[in-house]
Length: 198
Image (cartoon, rainbow, N blue to C red; front, side, top):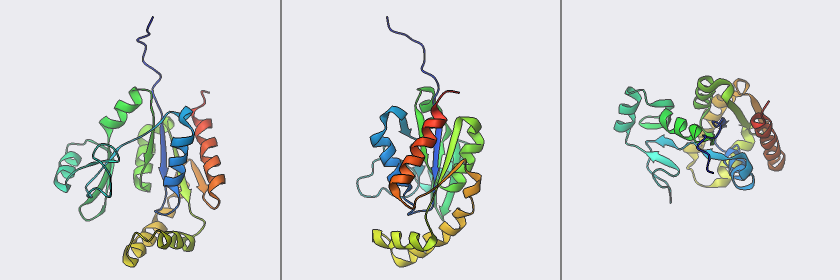
């Protein structure tokens, strides 16, 4: 006999870090190697155009700056930020609630302000993790090695990283990504502990 009982509501796992800290690599490893965690991405909205093979509703919901502003005014976002002029990123509350109700553990890959806002909103239902680079110098080396950004873009990312690092203490866990394998294990252990019923 099939049960119509809904599964237990999911929980929120928040990852924030300066660009180039290795956050996306850690997240990808968790998603691919640990399906037992039942992690599902929160699909954020952005007003930037798609990059490469990115698809609407998969990596992001791509909105125009005007549509983004309309939804902000309507109070539809759990968190949002205008990172640069007309360059918005945000998370729709309705999207997250839908996923949590389905029993998914919703994973957020967001900037530090967004991470703090989501943690504040969900409280004990959320675990916030800050991935910290070994140093700002190492961060610059990694961004240069990517060879995807112009020097002035890297300079602006470094300036932003220095600002973002000041938020680390507001997160539940800070993981230093000096050695990737160790950082991955620390993230895994933190999530396993958080999801284990008490």
